[in-house]
Image (cartoon, rainbow, N blue to C red; front, side):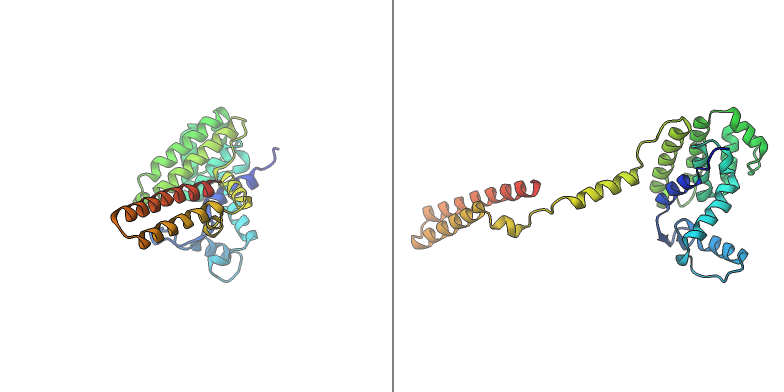
Length: 256
């Protein structure tokens, strides 16, 4: 039996779920890493534990909930790699029964919301990459009909597109391109490793800045000593020229 890809699939799901959220438009209410307060309360009750805030969700609890209530519910270990991730992520967002129906419709199996032997046979007879793409297409189509689409639609669309890309690549036997989130994190780390931008104080100490300051002071002093239209015109021209040069100098310093 092939090794379970649960750990890899869960890591990808959690990248999209983030931390704690309690958006007023989200019917799920308080949610910690994709686990709602209602789901957490039910899990704690079954385990004979007192109810508490989902903010206190422990890693072991999180893994157990995802494994039992979503991965196992859609028979993740029995699905082809890639397709298992697509169905698992759909189950987390829309429930195992709905995810199972998308899978069954995509595979051409009888639709009852339960992934059983007949569903697995239909999956085995098809192309897992095409089935994964179909599952994601059906999922996105349903999400677009929800009244909360105007609020969450942009994020949902990005998520489903990312799931589809990775799932199809995995199901096709190809290594998917690096995840957007992982790439962003690496770039952010590289940015932190770069030297900080020069401050305005450092730029002001440069010889060019000092020379420009002296030129402005000299022009103003000349205008004050011999006031007249010509002297003040010359002073103004010097100030404008120095200002333009200073802007270009600061910009070059920032870019460097």
